[in-house]
Image (cartoon, rainbow over all chains, first blue to last red; front, side, top):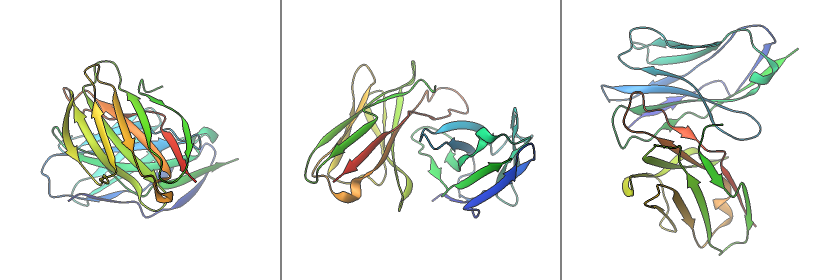
Length: 115
Length: 114
């Protein structure tokens, strides 16, 4: 079974600062993918970034980067230069590689960006 | 805009009733996933369809059923509704043909059972 743990229920960050959202995972699958999604107050789930378990480099997408430490089973999301529009819930998720593969989600971290 | 559409956006109904939620996947995506997001259970996988066939089942109640039609749209049917079924229901789609095969989510249907 897969498990995602997000230990920070809420985080505050000042505008223009960087923030790290923590995610640890547990799985027995040898090949898997890790995803981060953003859920603004409007409710939709927006895909942000992906990291494969065999990827040698940490993933980056614009202001988002993923600090992947396989041995520690962690996949932290780093948001640089925070903006007010980054205020939202952030979910870490994983799935095993291959078909018929659901996403397993963490409980989420609510990020509030302040002036 | 993810390209996944869901209707209706909001649904208010009474206990014991039956409702149908509809999802159209992104163009070209063969796989459709249904998820339920509630305050107490978080985001839970319900069921997956691939090209019309059921592929995987999660924590889906027997009162719930789904199907995927030849045009690849999917419907989630919820019957004998209970107060606890109130939740945000998401549909997601993926191509299942290319790495990393990201699941893209629709805007969700917010179901309120009174």
